[in-house]
Length: 168
Image (cartoon, rainbow, N blue to C red):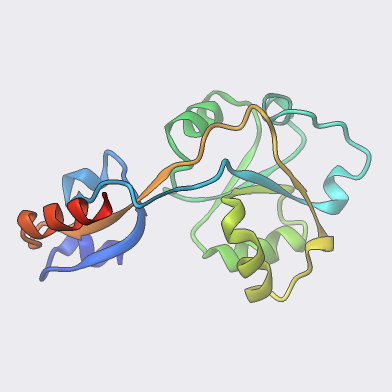
């Protein structure tokens, strides 16, 4: 979908995309259609057995746990900035989230961030149980991002305006 949006061959819209500075160069966006809940942290259960990780700040200060993240993916400006400033090691991959859950389960990394709304369907698709992981939410986790209808430049702005009006 992202390639289609970048190529802008035809009038296409895609549901549920984050609005980023980079994407604004090649796409147009609706008003927010949804705001994610704050991200959760999904750990390989063995990685955090007896560890006291009481906050996101404490986790990101740790240098012995490896974050598995998707290359080029944005967790939102606040969390992205925190990750940039963090000494925490990171392994970046280009695979989809289902493979990332499998990699986490196989101890190729120690934790990942995700929207809590995505956890159960993702675990089902990866054929993994919630009990295989330690799921944590932190009070200092930034607010969830907004999701939008992302459209190619070929979509008539008047149509997108009608969509926005219907959201009210």
